[in-house]
Length: 231
Image 1: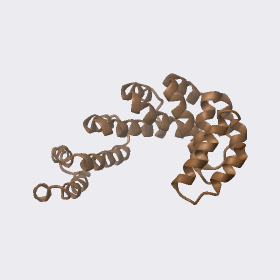
Image 2: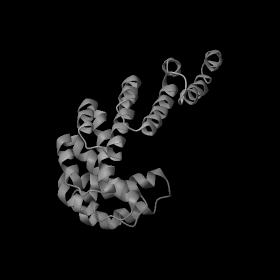
Image 3: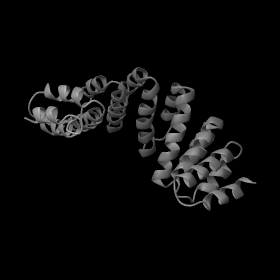
Image 4: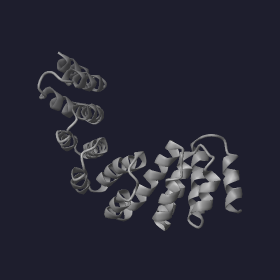
């Protein structure tokens, strides 16, 4: 059947994940041959996955045209999905191409979102290269967010390295926010290691809050250790 009919058929499916996946699959396939038309067909859908699928395919085909279309999107959620798709596609091919793409975006929220997403996406495959790039950015809240994203991404593999990177953030509130997030994730994966880290922190600050987070996680697997840590 033609793409429009296939999309209409997917929309008739019961609401849920399978319907969303079907719509995104049809939209992505359409975008391989006519991304502009694919975008027109999905632009009124609430499904952000469809927007992502269209722009992911479009960025591989013609990133310049995809960018022009991105800048015309007024819906913030769909614009973010388009940004994530373009960044993901470009980073997978060549991170430096993604950096060049970012640099030609107009200054504003879309560029800031792209910069933060580029940091975390690139860090998944090469955290050191992403870190070197982010450290060279001019001072800004977006740079801080990029560094936070890299730290969080690094923390999935090595929490200690992610936490060490936080010390380079100029904003205390940004450091604290990211530290809480990393410790929370770490305590779910390895509460005893997280507990050892928190116990060695100097008193004051948010140590008690971090400690409580670890205790809560540890109590689910080792009640005695949780009680000892809480004392």
